[in-house]
Image (cartoon, rainbow, N blue to C red; front, top):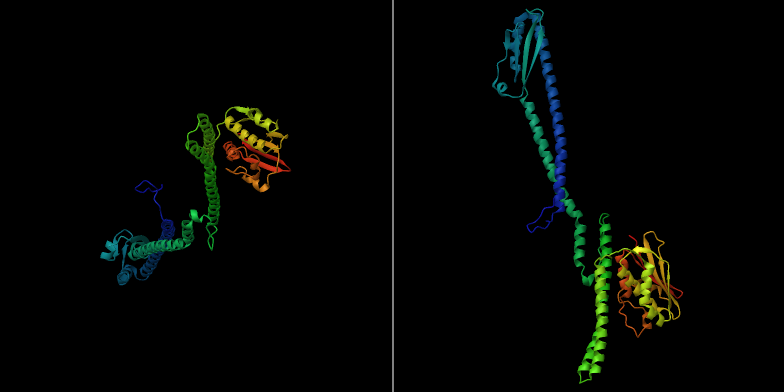
Length: 452
């Protein structure tokens, strides 16, 4: 769960501190498990050693008492027990006859009585010369010292584990801060990038393998941003240029009309001329709004499947007069039935036909070619014969307000240079792309439509 700040936004965190904390906890957990295993192993070794020591001492006492019983009887056994009593510190030996009557017992010391780490072992001493043939014995030992040693081991292992975790945390924090220095360098370089310095790119003197893809992607993004920024500046300049001429015309004609008294008919002609300019301005604004909507990701509203050839013939009827005036013949080749946004596709076809009509040789044929050979797309191309377009200009045909030298063929007409840009937008709205090629006087411009 991401922590939230007071304002509801996600709070930032330190990678160095978080990584140091996690590695420290991981180190403590691992060393803790190792320490517990080590302590358990040591405890088992001490217990086994104590068990062997206890059994060894009982066996030794049993041998000594059996030997004394054979050589001197009960009196010798009792004398030996009494003489060895001072050597049995922190222990207690109790000896009983075969019938259970006490024979000898070491005094119960205060330390032995208070200890919680005592172990008792009962054993039999074979004494054939004594009544009953044996003696019963009970040996009690105090292992408090071993228990204290175990506690010291546990404390030492705990301190070592905690110290190791702290050292790992400090070392990790230092190392991470050092290794994150390239990121701080990249942050400084990023802050230096501004609209006035879009040419700057990120770089590191010693690039890390993990950072290289991020640097490459960021620099590629900056290439696109710089290109888009340049296109935006160019677009703004083109818009200002395109609007300046009709605005200057409107202002000039209006000023002339208002300079002196004029007949009604002359004023009417001025208003009609101004209306034409304003209609042209309105058309340009509407086209710009359409392109803006397409740039924001608008998608075509596909209807029922329709014949693309039928749509082309409908558009051809609208351009019939212009085609006849230019002495051109229209030919539609191929067909495909696709679910498309009919008004948008007809608008794209109209722009392509209008563009081909302006630049086609008089008496030639303008051909609309529809090809559905590709599995998931339909290709629509308008072909005309005329002046060959230079190869370096072909990628720019669909840019806004772009005009090649050939556009000067029609000085009597006014075209604001958004027609092919709209074709490109309509293609994108149908998940398609644009096409353009020109060679040997034959030019083909068109687009593709995704079938689904």
